[in-house]
Image 1: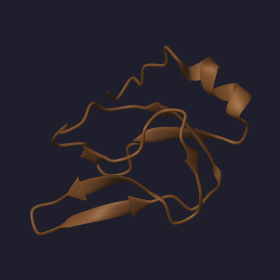
Image 2: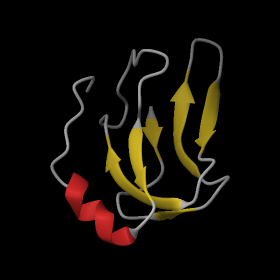
Image 3: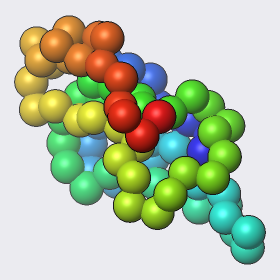
Length: 76
C-alpha cells in the first residue's frame, strides 16, 4: 500500500488514492465517488492487507472530515 492522497483532499471519480502492490503487479486504486478523504486506515507501506479490507473513509461533506480525526479501524 503506497499512499498518494492526503486526508482532507477533495476526491473526484477516477482519482488515485493509493497504489496496491501484489505478487505480480502494482496497480493504482481509483475512487468511484466524489467526496473528501476523511481517514486513511493503514500506514503507508503496510503489507499483507487482506482482500476486501477497507483502506480509507470517504465522506460527502468537508465538514464531516473532523468526525474521523481519531478513527482507528479494528483491522489496522
